[in-house]
Image (cartoon, rainbow, N blue to C red; front, side, top):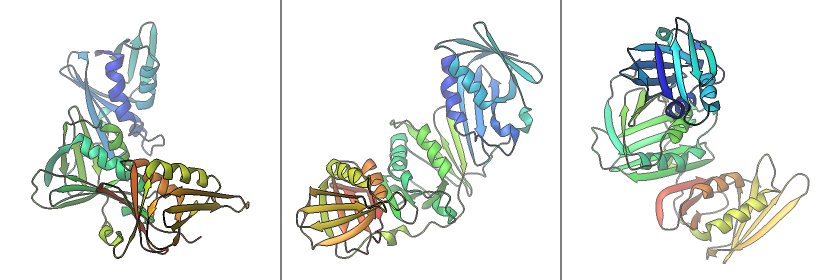
Length: 366
């Protein structure tokens, strides 16, 4: 079989699916991309058995075929070719010959019938949200997911739909990120599922932030996200996410209002001399003033003072400066509000004029 395509038409879908392929594989075929040809349409599929990404592009071909090629090698060849180059792929029994200009590249193939397929159970719920909304929920919360925590349900992101809103929540036990958006659809029941870390990362790359609708199907153990020419499937984490509402600070709080960029720059400078392992930084709040202090085992010390809007009692509290900088990096607006109770209680950070996105950071003992 002979397949003809433009290099640019192949490159983008290849880059999308190859991001799913792990560099170290338990099965050799997982290093390959599954390619199916039907009616001049090429469907590319990649999986690591946890997530699966399938996308399509137009080619010139007669008949039908299904084969696998080494994913990264195929991508690297396409990337190395000049823009707009024509590519032909000749399929033989166990080899594929790729030609472009005077170049010829022969790749070994593995049987398509051996390629694993993630086939979720019948979807229990189907709904649609805006691509931009889903991307925003991921971008505003994914940084707070745990990494390789023994509490496996923290190594992912909670997606919850209830009461006219869709919500994303992530926590690693030391900080929590929550972001809401309105939901106009109707569901048979409230939804609460946990997406694995890799699924969240891949979806963040895949979504372009436009106004198009993305169709989501949820079964007992899988989630499938359908875009125009792309289908993304992932296993769900089977576990119970912690009751995040209990983590939200409540009771008598004092409010600090600061210019976001001024605070972020002061924190970044002070962090230079913080302990590299614990990243601790001391906040000392007094009327209209925030004093920042950090030191490390080498006896280096940094101090900064910035003007803030604060009228509560004098308070000294310690934080991991990295957690604060992560929040300030995704928070909207020019001003940030920080609600504090005392030196032993978590702080709540929000945008001055909106509580759609809320961030909780636990204190540190310094």
